[in-house]
Length: 302
Image (tube, rainbow, N blue to C red; front, side, top):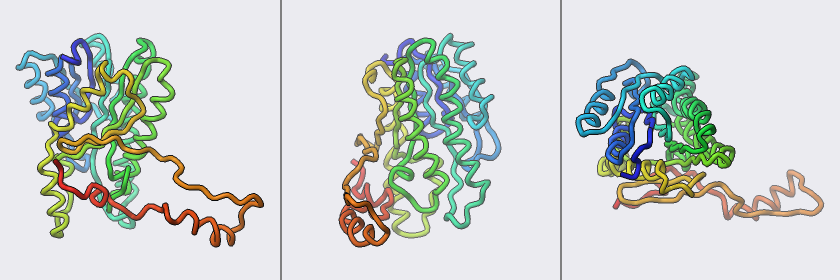
């Protein structure tokens, strides 16, 4: 019972990865606030029945859980989630920021609404819940955040400028929290999950290559991601902060973070011409290709 006595908020916990995390948190002894407003993949509508089913499943197994159907994209919604934890369980120990939507479009066809809707749920939503929880974490001098990023942001993907920007922004948010709140024993880490979910199910399969990619993803269930989230929330991970992990079926990766890879120096300074003649030829060998996630993770999941 690695989470015994802990209180956890899991956003987007009605389905997929969030559901698997909420259930395993409860199995490991946590009291869980199951947040999900039940919107569609694109963020429209609401249906709380999936989240209610998660709550019922936890409670019927002897655990403790409550439902919250507020939106992470509103600060008032985040306040209500955290307050629900305080009112019902007396404290908050971990926030798992998992809620998300997709509005995939090739960049020149992406509308401002497509952009803002995805940013508001993923990035602003992660800020909102973390911002509210941080006030309690600071007072109690303990707490942990688990953020969900994606290789769409870490590496790249077609037709996901909004999603990729949000997910890479989440990495910077998590790292900043880890730095700013270390003095209060607050930890923050990211998981980049590979798992078949409702969101992944919306990926187009118009070519044989796309179908092959999706078929591989179907092999990777949300239940494979949950153990890492539970571990990062637990006291066993007390020395783990500011990191990015990727979980791919039975594989766990520690992902790199940007650092200098090569340099070029000219004591008299640079001009556009000397950059073209000297700097770029010296640096070009370390340029990154226009990779997508599937190019980097090119082998079958194990």
